Length: 172
Image (tube, rainbow, N blue to C red; front, top):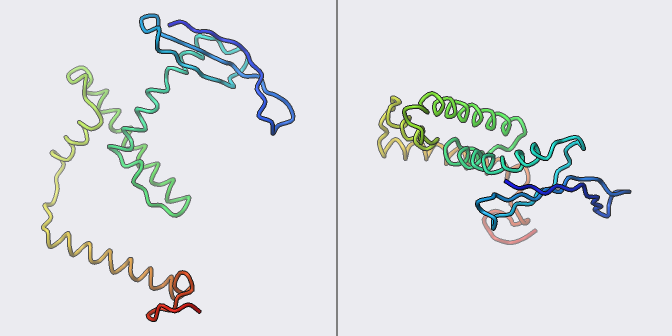
């Protein structure tokens, strides 16, 4: 890898003065057409090799987020409160830790094992209760009754949206 490094001063127009940043440009020797640019606010004493290494970690960070969304439900929260969001994120992180530990444990025998592979294996080996269509519909109807009760309670507190009176479609 080749790296070009300079200290540059940038001013965003809002702050009183410009700030000094690291500007880093890297490319692979065997792929001279692939050039990556980065800015860093790391301490002045940070070695160029460390800046370049950090820049190269972006792929793995993005990959971890993709796996967490795809296999651990990172993007499937419907939290309305801060505490609920933190609880969801903690569960996702624990699931991802479990997946990582399993990948490391079986890395010698299955070096290409992915988080999706582990998720599929778990769905096959964990005990499960087969659910009938009637049970799925029953559970859905319970959720719908609860959701309708929440909507009705909200209307009772605030009234229908847009100032419409319930039932006749006329405004106040």
